[in-house]
Figure 1 (cartoon, rainbow, N blue to C red):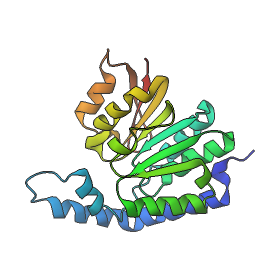
Figure 2: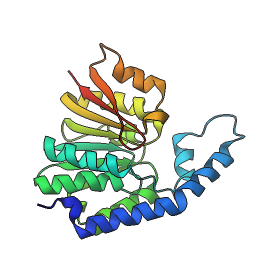
Figure 3: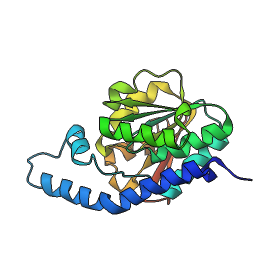
Figure 4: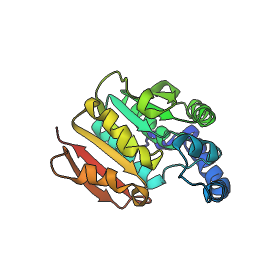
Length: 219
């Protein structure tokens, strides 16, 4: 039995995004770090988005497959994503939504150029009917959602993980799962929040890709 990840259109687009990342992401990120090395303050999310506009920054295939498994198993009505980039993670989730025949993923991307590329990739993968990408600050763009969140992926600017999560907390339900990618890069304020008893989460680390924090909303 095959899955939506076996669709030639899906594999072709995911392979293309991976090749783009392998070819250029390291150079783009090195230039970004060199540019900001002498700045008196770390770059803002907007500045970082401009500096990294040509970096695909896709999720590791292990994390993508995990997202697909979660969506297939949970059969969510609403998946929300902070940090769409070129759309790789969106494709993994949307492929599962299509296989389920139910649900929608709403993503957010600060950089309009990246959002445009993600939309193109989703169209070519045959998954655009299951997706919506909102352009702008996620704290504003995701503040108005059509229902409660079943699954949340945090994979954008790391310093915004906690602010975005706090904006979205009223839309979380008991049982919502939060997948936070790039664990070694996450600010302590975020991991402390989801790991501290009394904040309404049960959280643990998973050895997928560069590391994932998986958090269950308890209340």
